[in-house]
Image 1: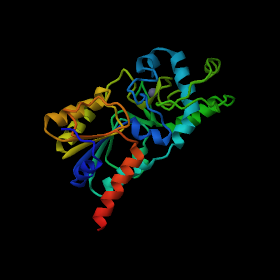
Image 2: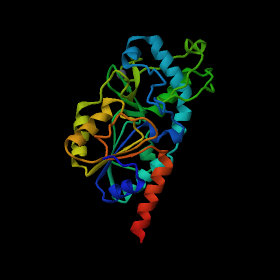
Image 3: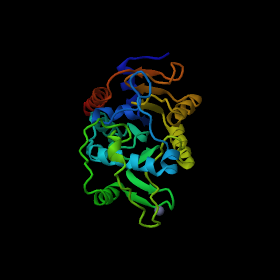
Length: 281
Ligand SMILES: [Zn+2]
């Protein structure tokens, strides 16, 4: 029987051993939009890894948009939801965190033991030789290669950290090259659409799920199998699943014991405060 009572969530988390599975809905209050609206429909068509690899024009388009978006993406700060998760982890109630987000905001909020299922935009990888670079370094190279490029386009930031810009600007954008092998096949170190999560990481995450006392899904619609399969595994093993998400989720009432449809930041802040108050008294 599924309940929507916040008190049930408080009870579940107070017993500890909780694994948090987090998605884009946790970061929207930090100004990073979700791929999906509250209705579950995808609002953006992201570039696939195959497109990026196959076509130098696609790489120009990707990197020009990403170059414009990066200062804003890099400036995003953890919101009360991230801070509450970190506080609950420090209190020993939440253990490991599995995130679908590529923004590093859990770590910025002070959380550790974070498995980044889809990688992180903080690094760039050469698809030719495998060398990894810090994004800030690649950004310096891009600035040197594009001294006259206007970076101040004001379009909305998109979920993968880029900004749609005029086509006329894209043709002038100069790509940079891997300093090890000279290739221009540089890609953000994230799992792009059309790629799969590394197998060993998936196996580690399954093991963490099976060791948990409960699973707390935060801000994920579970629309993609990369996150949903962990819920299927928990259900199979009789581990309770609670979902706090604003809007549609794929998880059914048979799979979920607690379901709260509410803004993440205020809900998690209130949960963390209630539990901190109990421990203090
Ligand atoms: Zn290389």
